Amino acid sequence: MLNAEQHNKESMIAGIDTRLQVPPSSASNEKLQSLGFLSFLEELQTELNQTVVRFAQLTRLDLATLKTQSPTLNNARADNPEFQAFLSAFKQRKANIEQLIAADIPEQAAHQAIIDEILALNAFIEAHYVKPATVQPSAATDHRPLEFFLGMGILFLPIIFAWFTLRKGYSKRVRWVAFIWLVVFLIATLPRPHPPASDNPLDFSPQELTPQVAPKSS
Image 1: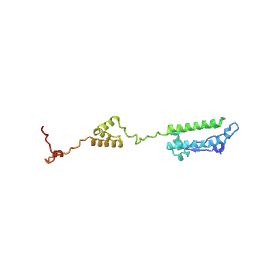
Image 2 (image 1 turned 60 degrees about the horizontal axis):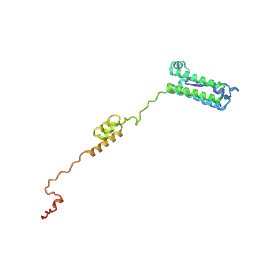
Image 3 (image 1 turned 45 degrees about the horizontal axis):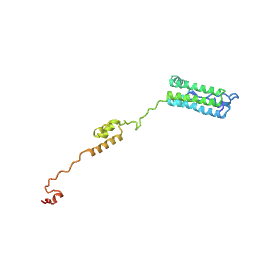
Image 4 (image 1 turned 120 degrees about the vertical axis):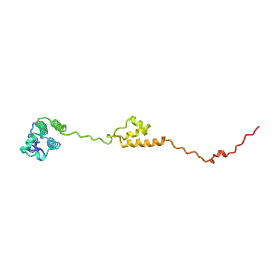
């Protein structure tokens, strides 16, 4: 379980002191005698470390290198505006958390206020160091929609308007439908050739073989 000695142990992440200063438990600060609150502080220390790691990853800082304390690297960090902006925000939030831990306030209130500080620190990272993702158009949204008048043109006069679907942006499905309908339209509307009339004089219809009976005269 967490105690003051463990909690005051130096913890350096990317050259930033992430250790939480936890005062010794006292009768006036009942939450520091709560095992549940001390367990919460252990998780909180891990969360603080993770925020620094995440910042370093987003800004492509080398964690292993930044843990060293050489003057050259310290000067480089001092000249890095991203590092300085995060360091200022981190120190402020960490100081606020330590005040909440030391304050004689109920455990539940301190718990919620500390979580708010962590959320605010993460929001700072999101706002300043997370680049907005480039939205790639999906296959469904990349295609240009079929306009109403073009659709009507394809329906009633596909021989002209079906070719407009070959323009950039129309999906293969729209093109297939337009040209299949064009073929059907041509088959249905083109005139069919009539059979040629016969030149054979012997050709006659069966009615011509029926004897013609002259009407009787009265």
